[in-house]
Length: 226
Image 1 (cartoon, rainbow, N blue to C red):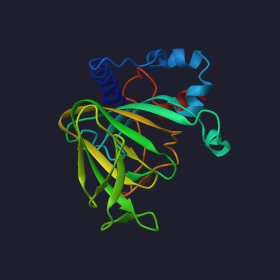
Image 2: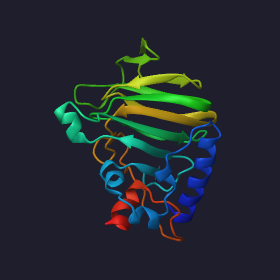
Image 3: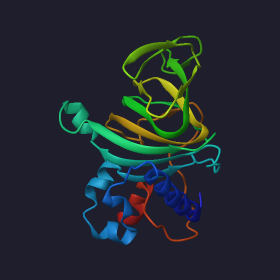
Image 4: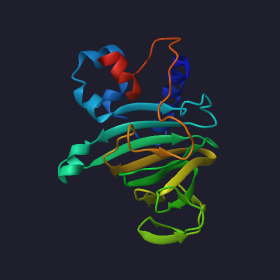
C-alpha cells in the first residue's frame, strides 16, 4: 500500500469512528516525531495503535480491514493466569470489504456491531487437525445464547448484536448495506503469531513511502522507533 493511501484511510476512519460517539485515546494522535520523543515502550511491546492491512494483496477496498488496538495485555500474563489478560480493538469493515477466512490459536473474542450496516460472518468449525470442517455444525454464543449453525452459515449481526468466537472457530466477515464499526473485546491479542489464514496471505501490509506518515501503524514501530 502507498503511504498516501494509508494516511487517507486514517483520516476517514477517525471521522467514521467519531460519528458513532467513540473517541480514540490521546496517543492515537501523536505524530511520528511525538511518538518517538515520548515513552513508547508499552505501545510497541503490546502493539497498541493504528493498524491497516490489505493482507499483502494490494486490494484494500476488496480485501482489507482497518483496526485500532486501544489496549492489550501480554502473552506472559496469559501463561501466568493473572495480570492484564484482555485486549480491546475498534475496527471498520467497509461495505463488501472482505476480512478473509481465518482462525486464532489462543484468542477468544467478542465481535460486536457498534453501528452502521449489518456485519456478516461466515462461520466454520475446525476438524481434529485444526483446518476447516466442511460438514460439522458451528456452536457459538450470540449475545448470551448458545446457537447451533450449519457449517458455512452466514450470520448477520445488526448494530448492538455480538458473537463470541472461541479459539479455533474459522471466520471471515464483511459489511453489508453500509460500512460497519466493529468492537472487539478479547483475551490478549498477538497478531504476529495468533492468526491462521485459509489463504496464503500475510497479516500486515508492505508500505510504499510516497509521502511522510501522519501517524505510525503498529507495523511501523520497528522501522521508525528502533
